[in-house]
Length: 135
Image 1 (cartoon, rainbow, N blue to C red):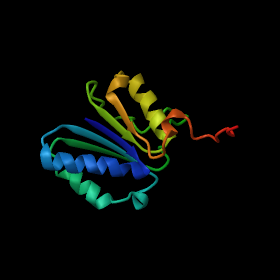
Image 2 (cartoon, rainbow, N blue to C red):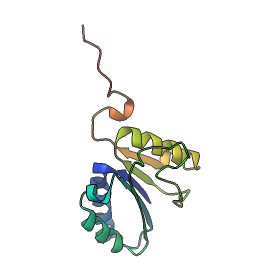
Image 3 (tube, helix red, strand yellow):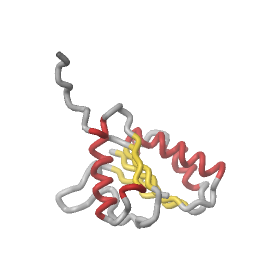
Image 4 (cartoon, rainbow, N blue to C red):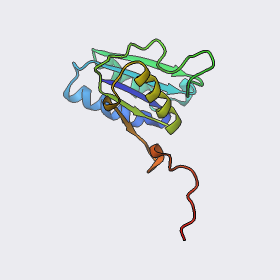
């Protein structure tokens, strides 16, 4: 399992980690979480404790401006071992999720194995732009 989150997307990641800690603590899981800084990492202490409670968990924290790909090619998944058969769950800002999806597919993961949680209805589909007037 691969969990990738940014910002408030940590909410879903934590819920998944809590479930694993209770019902399947031996499951292998790779976690990538992106925040602007440790100071802005919501529930950081609880998050770290959950990860430590899972013996087969790998955590990759990315602090400061890892919201997309950079000119030098860095992105939040740089140097993260990506299991090719992992079910992947991505949660965070829409642009972040789109960027992560491109990186995962480029790394060989099946699009069918990549799942998303968007907090705004229709935001993944591109409906976030201003709607046309209804006549």
